[in-house]
Image 1 (cartoon, rainbow, N blue to C red):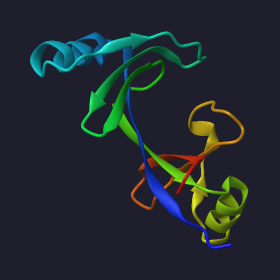
Image 2 (cartoon, rainbow, N blue to C red; image 1 turned 90 degrees about the vertical axis):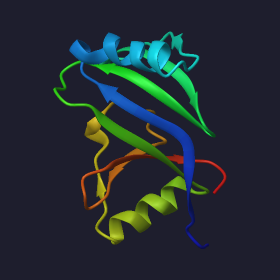
Image 3 (cartoon, rainbow, N blue to C red; image 1 turned 60 degrees about the vertical axis):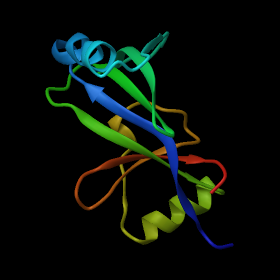
Length: 123
């Protein structure tokens, strides 16, 4: 089986609590996006808002314990187990400690330190 990856539609912006309301207001009130608060139950994410960002979905996540904003992108693959093994063999950092997620998904890191959510889906 050939391993294939495809960019997903989700982009998550992890924002420190002290900048969260101001950031949500920027997208809603200045850029005039339709911003929707979405209920969330997560140990580190205090609140989340969703907005359509072109063909993507941008998630504004208020994350406890961070001091700088970070962007996470989504990558999908047809077979998560084979893809994860392939990435490990190629010395890609699997960093599931970044944030608690479903065990069927993984966080990975590129050489520049960018974080991606790897999930199973159509690739």
